[in-house]
Image (cartoon, rainbow, N blue to C red; front, side, top):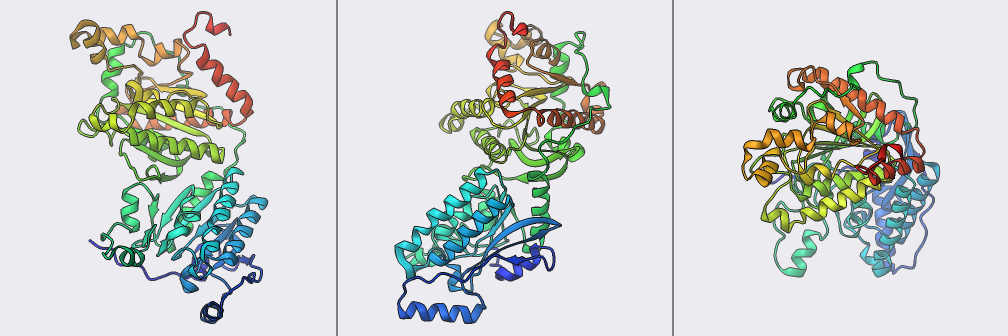
Length: 509
């Protein structure tokens, strides 16, 4: 079904809906003058009279739910929101000012792209805009994007596609090549439904599709996480069941069975029960979505983090976790590094996909790149063994500063049945293999792989809410403690942890 094109929201109307009333302060200086033909000068004069603006962008700052933010917004009624030298200079000055002031930046382009009247010089303005955005992000500052209809051409291919978090309005036309241009060049209409916000969301290119009236709410929630204090004083958890001694009497096979119960709480239940300010992110940002992974912003008892978790609900025998899930996870790692935001990985998988599609999609390479990215990540990291932990798909999310395990979670190169088939040529010895391989949380803690075990009383599936609260308390404590450790020391400890794992005398190093 075709989604109707939305009524266009002007730049000033967007600002009124987004910012607290009466708080917007313009940063705009008079637009610079560039060489132009008489015809172009007349077009500019007409656009100024029509809109009351002197260029196609408005910049400034204001308050969003009481928080100071910077904003740049396009105005389509001004020469189709096109970007020339003057508009680009205004954008760059505003982005640089937001960076210098340490302000989060919301960008809302609406544009037909480069201003054709200024030719190639206008086209090249996208370089300096992209450079300014990149510098803003390198400073660890949030960059949020709201795409309005239409957003096309060089604008989409520069500042419209660089957001940490990107939303579009319902029905928005969003595409690299505008449909009119496509038709003129190729003599055919562009396929219907491709260049729509909803379709791009389905392909993992947008995090949400929301009308302008809902923008302030989601932006405020995102910023509650992204700009939360990084070095708060954490409280020691009051629930002793968030850090228990291993119980050697629990057979490994009991944990395997418990971890596979359909009613066992997964990452979605954990977030719903124990986290606040949860905002899902969607896809890789490069055209892929895999239901086997969940990526979100969240806070545990006030501790901010990015959560990337293997979703037990999204993994089925017919659709196991594929390479795109790890590419989506690596997006979360990049965000954590850019924003210096703690990262929580949640491991809960019966195993990554074993298929032609997974091989051709580069599953082994994605596991390797995830391992390399995570173990060298310049941000605090905590991994959670929540349930099943099978194979390379699980391993890819393990190497963190701290590892927290649920009592009945486990980690193994293969499911015990697979290990039994290799060693004994039958699956009948699966329980014995699980015991011999040391897959239990108790064994993992004894080996120095796990730092903390969160109890199940006696099984998380039977006390899901209480268990998730305990796990959330443990995560908050770990995050608060890690955020007080200097980055160089965190990196040193992480290197030592995995450099000497399993080596004789490792405990003394």
